[in-house]
Image 1 (tube, one colour):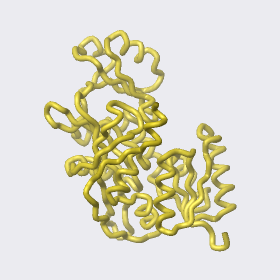
Image 2 (cartoon, helix red, strand yellow; image 1 turned 120 degrees about the vertical axis):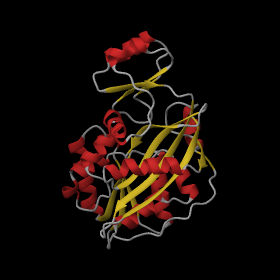
Image 3 (cartoon, one colour; image 1 turned 60 degrees about the vertical axis):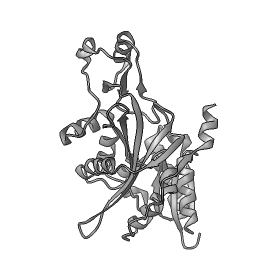
Length: 301
């Protein structure tokens, strides 16, 4: 392209990247997608592939769907702007154990936690076992008895969390936070309830909801690390008491992005504007609606 490309999206062909691409194209922006599927476990190879593509199409912005930490770590070598937080910040929020420790310091309510030497004191099952890393619920388990939990602990070579299972449902907050040049912070967020699946995995059926309390908790977490970019945060709502418990943070576009777009929170376009030094108007969210990702539902079958 003579004048260069607006945005290069690095993705592996998933529904999140597709939603980001569609949003940006709808605003008349020129977009290309780099297929990262061959280098998802190869950081040096990923950066080499990305740099070659940047040299070829000269984008103004490179947006990662998953590998924000890698781009942040090599931002000076990329050859264009990368609208993500620092590598250390992304790594800390992505780590379920470290993020839980941050929330403990902030006094944010979480499910009851157990050390490995406290397994014998657990009385109610199932329990929740989480390894520090993993996407789409791949590191989350629901052992139904002590033996199953002990086997998970023994087999886990990584830091992990053991916590109470809260009978209820999941709510998520999609947010964008961006420190401005004048010292102020642009912030916008919306919440949605996950209807399906009920325990783990990429959400397929969601219902927009008004949860200012969850949005405020999300902001407290992201303010604490001076976050920059888009982020999804997950909570569990107790069916018995209505209390909200923080679960985890996903410092990237979330699997519920189509719910945000449906409600009028156009995270990809907001990110584009902010990365270009503009201060967007605060989006006016529409009435929340049911959002169904039929392609994901079909994949589950």
